[in-house]
Image (cartoon, rainbow, N blue to C red; front, top):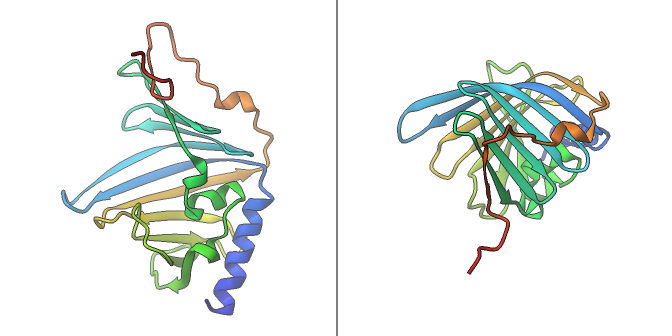
Length: 199
């Protein structure tokens, strides 16, 4: 890792370590390698330490994902379903947990500066040091002034790319823990996969 890259990575990690909460708009583009098509979504993401995250999708269809502790909640208003699943956050890669102010990118990745004509910031290319079954590569576009991530791209093992661009990110705005509670309307079917099945 070059001195320039190391300085930026250290500043980026420090930025998220001192971030108690943040709220941002996002645009997600998922490029399917095999189907050669891109699915685009937009919405807002809200985060609060420790480890509360809410993704509110507005387009193309409303959906809500909440990560709270060891559980993830998925609400689909059109289908009137709320699914609850277990999530072992200790198994999350540093490519995600550094946003929570945890995880050391330099311990998990070989990090280099990439070429990018369209980037507003500096492109960092993260190649896993160990074999990683969940993804092939992570690319982070970082604002060199603020050291916050403008765009994150995760390359799947099959070459598909999941890109999330953060729009108008605001940090330490005083977000309440109640923002991460889901109160679906009456008639919503709840599928709780964390409970043991009845014999």
